[in-house]
Length: 408
Ligand SMILES: Cc1ncc(COP(=O)(O)O)c(C=O)c1O
Image (cartoon, rainbow, N blue to C red):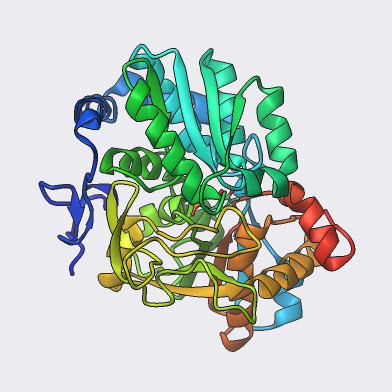
């Protein structure tokens, strides 16, 4: 499997919208064919339209707060010895996580499509919170589908969605987590697609949603490329970009501009509780290809091919599938994927929050766990950058319960 030179990551697919001939596609019911085709046509026009690009840039600057900081974690670097560790503090974006980029772009597209209603799914609650914020800003009526288990464990984000005027629909089917929320939201959209725009919260689903999401989060690496060159004068020879992966939107956005550089991409999945067989790490654990939410991808499944159960302390990573973009990057050997356990993520959260003035949520804490594991083995000339893509406030209750105290 090969990456085509000079073609952006989201456009690496063939005429059937498959990446590497194996991943992605549009495995959709007949009723969604027209809305998906319409959205595909609209987005391919908008992404080339100067006025739309100016609108996006304007809102990213004046609403999202771009650029987010790029900082050196001096204390963590000194404590670990070895590589220099930096963070791209995406949690400083308005709302506290990267999900604001996709939500903002989807609202702009919905407005262009003349839609007054927008729906979305959420796991950690950030995709839902951001969509509720953007919907409020752009005057759209908003409904968010969220698993009942996630509603309980991500309370602060649920409160934010409600405060922003969104209706939060609890999903009580299946595992009551993100996978069920995405399914329920798509089901709702199938019956209401004439009036309603759908914003899938990660780089998953039918191809157009993967494209819009990765195109939006690419803002992260556009900023980072400039910040890295400012800091080092050039791209360091030995550079590792470490990102957690749930659906894969933050990682896709963090790596996009560095595709044609020597930077090493490391994706960190949720390994789940240490002594449990359950995890949410399809790439690390050799899962087979299956179809989930309209796209072919590596997905956790049982012997009959039914979607398997997952477990993770982090609601945002607790998903059995993974973006076709990441399946492609893995098989093309452009990115490497590993996992961190719940316990490792908690330890990483604690160390980073104690030593530095950032407090990563449990999702990026998985990425920090890998950085903490790797840094002491590397030379001081090597550079690690972690995408600190979410703020820990939403995880306050879980952290207090597991560690006894919450540091921020
Ligand atoms: C802060 C944060 N990071 C990471 C993720 C994982 O999603 P993705 O892999 O799409 O970035 C989520 C998902 O909710 C999240 O809220």
